[in-house]
Picture 1: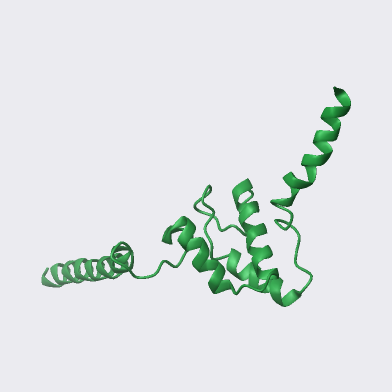
Picture 2 (picture 1 turned 45 degrees about the horizontal axis):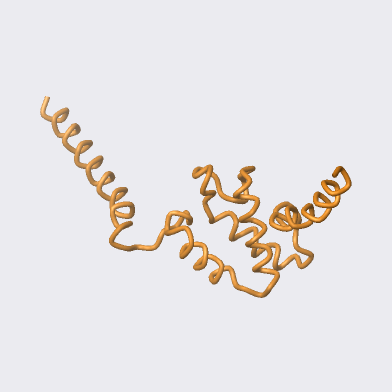
Length: 131
């Protein structure tokens, strides 16, 4: 029984380690590694949400780093990988979501807040000037 468990553990160990095999290991080609790292810095960790997969220590971020490196190594471009990740996880996965009906308020909010701030400041300066 004990030998069977040891044998099972030895068989399963490579499969378990394979998923995140490239999570913390750089690619041998420095150009491909630079592409992978640049992409990882623009992809949001689905668990941490405030960190990129490049910065996160979460297990899912490690898996995502591994997948990104594997796909880069296989010859996919960062844009293809980004499109696949967005298809799988949605626009939220990227720090730079595309303009769409769902995300337009995110793009418009800073402009609205800036205009409102300028209007409030202008109003306050006018009131002070009248005194």
